Amino acid sequence: MGTALVLTAVMALVTFLLVRAGELKTWHVLLVGILGIYLDRIGWADPVVYAVMWLVQGLTHTAP
Image 1 (cartoon, rainbow, N blue to C red):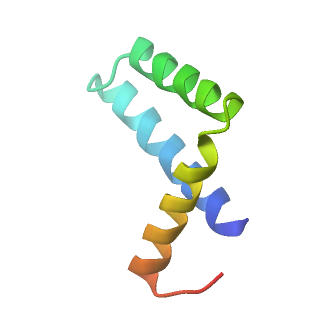
Image 2: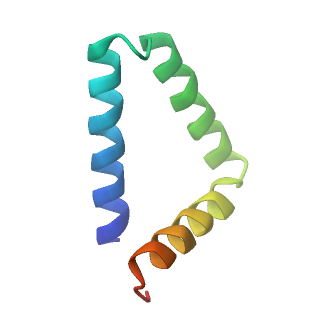
Protein backbone atom coordinates (compact mmCIF):
# COMPACT_ATOMS: atom_id res chain seq x y z
CA MET A 1 0.00 0.00 0.00
CA GLY A 2 2.86 2.38 0.76
CA THR A 3 4.40 1.98 -2.69
CA ALA A 4 1.06 2.65 -4.37
CA LEU A 5 0.64 5.84 -2.38
CA VAL A 6 4.12 7.07 -3.28
CA LEU A 7 3.64 6.23 -6.98
CA THR A 8 0.28 8.00 -7.00
CA ALA A 9 1.82 11.10 -5.43
CA VAL A 10 4.70 11.10 -7.93
CA MET A 11 2.35 10.68 -10.90
CA ALA A 12 0.11 13.47 -9.58
CA LEU A 13 3.13 15.77 -9.20
CA VAL A 14 4.42 14.98 -12.69
CA THR A 15 0.95 15.56 -14.15
CA PHE A 16 0.64 18.88 -12.33
CA LEU A 17 4.06 20.02 -13.56
CA LEU A 18 3.31 18.99 -17.15
CA VAL A 19 0.00 20.86 -17.15
CA ARG A 20 1.67 23.92 -15.60
CA ALA A 21 4.47 23.87 -18.18
CA GLY A 22 1.94 23.65 -21.01
CA GLU A 23 3.24 20.28 -22.18
CA LEU A 24 0.01 18.54 -21.22
CA LYS A 25 -3.37 20.09 -21.74
CA THR A 26 -6.08 19.94 -19.10
CA TRP A 27 -8.41 17.98 -21.38
CA HIS A 28 -5.71 15.31 -21.82
CA VAL A 29 -5.59 14.87 -18.04
CA LEU A 30 -9.38 14.63 -17.87
CA LEU A 31 -9.51 12.00 -20.61
CA VAL A 32 -6.83 9.89 -18.95
CA GLY A 33 -8.63 10.20 -15.61
CA ILE A 34 -11.91 9.10 -17.17
CA LEU A 35 -10.11 6.19 -18.83
CA GLY A 36 -8.66 5.15 -15.46
CA ILE A 37 -12.09 5.26 -13.83
CA TYR A 38 -13.58 3.27 -16.72
CA LEU A 39 -10.86 0.62 -16.54
CA ASP A 40 -11.44 0.30 -12.80
CA ARG A 41 -15.19 -0.10 -13.27
CA ILE A 42 -14.87 -2.90 -15.83
CA GLY A 43 -12.27 -4.72 -13.77
CA TRP A 44 -9.26 -4.20 -16.02
CA ALA A 45 -7.41 -2.14 -13.45
CA ASP A 46 -6.15 -5.21 -11.57
CA PRO A 47 -3.85 -6.44 -14.38
CA VAL A 48 -2.45 -2.92 -14.75
CA VAL A 49 -1.82 -2.67 -10.99
CA TYR A 50 -0.12 -6.08 -10.98
CA ALA A 51 2.04 -5.13 -13.96
CA VAL A 52 3.14 -1.89 -12.29
CA MET A 53 3.87 -3.73 -9.04
CA TRP A 54 5.91 -6.32 -10.94
CA LEU A 55 7.85 -3.60 -12.72
CA VAL A 56 8.54 -1.64 -9.51
CA GLN A 57 9.60 -4.78 -7.67
CA GLY A 58 11.89 -5.70 -10.54
CA LEU A 59 13.50 -2.27 -10.57
CA THR A 60 13.87 -2.02 -6.79
CA HIS A 61 14.48 -5.73 -6.10
CA THR A 62 11.96 -5.88 -3.29
CA ALA A 63 9.36 -8.49 -2.46
CA PRO A 64 5.80 -7.71 -1.28
